[in-house]
Image 1 (cartoon, rainbow, N blue to C red):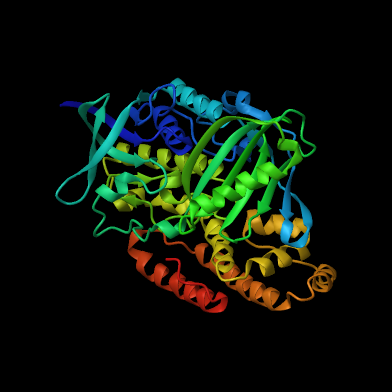
Image 2: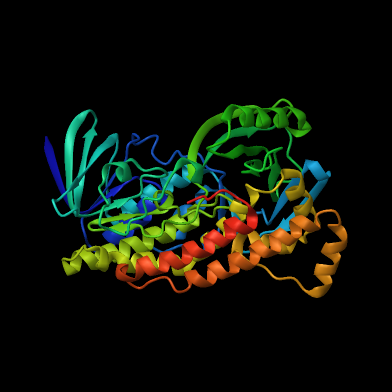
Length: 456
């Protein structure tokens, strides 16, 4: 068995892994990315292909490296179809927005990390995590091209995606690492790249469509006016084939897809939950999907993964330079994630909780009655406010859904309280137990108010 030694070993060549590794390599440390796919398939990931906020991405991989993957920069709003109400909502999307070729984007971030000096080991399947007797992670065991290999490093960064195998193998007892993870907190996604014969009329919009169950939704994202990413997301506790049939049925009924050809098919899992309370343990950090760094209402995870990679990479450099990869010395990574987007995502997850306890027709009726710009704020910022005039207008339009609205506003108040609590995220693992106890008390009130089953 061969042994490969590095300062840092990164699992997974996705966005979070590449940005973390590039950040580390730019500081002169030796870092390897271990990727299960072969070199040709690496970067081929099921995704909605919508990318928001790339103008402010970390500089570890220069933006100009990514731009050739941007196939449609003319999208500027969401188009939310609600068949239950025979309504289409046009919702503005704040910030820079683009639709990308995700596979080309994947190749581009890999090339950017290579430019920074990252080694890539493809066709490498991880099968175990190496830990010392006191629990510090020191490496990985894997098979590379069918041959056993051991990777040793001062630090391991887990970018292996949703429901990461590494977290099944590692023993996190005695740490703060979040192990409160189960399938019901995740969504399955399936998408097809479809070539249509004529340009679609909505090539400037991201199209969402509700299914007849709140746990599922369809999307149509135009890579170009004739190349459409058509997909489906649904909670893992739903019956997948029934919802896939909903996508197929909708494709058959949309005239713009008549005579279309399918170019690619792919599925994946993604978190629709709050970010991990803590994504660090001695010698170990989790990033991106492997730490729940995804907007739980939209499924958008590229931006969060890029910044999580940056923060983890910078903390890795410090920890290795200090010769101290303890949980305490890695903690700053947690705090930066929560300060930047983690608290906001936790607030957004409250609305996912609410959706599980609201009748889907009532929910769609409520959405149809709200102003589009306020929906955009709720989807992307985690909170919103309305003037008296807008409240009055919405009240008139939403007659018949006032009970649902009352529940919504009670829940919103609690979501705002939760957001405020995340602003006091602990500065060290020693304070985590008290902070978590107070957060869980807020969540108990959310479950009581919404009538939803406990999610965590």
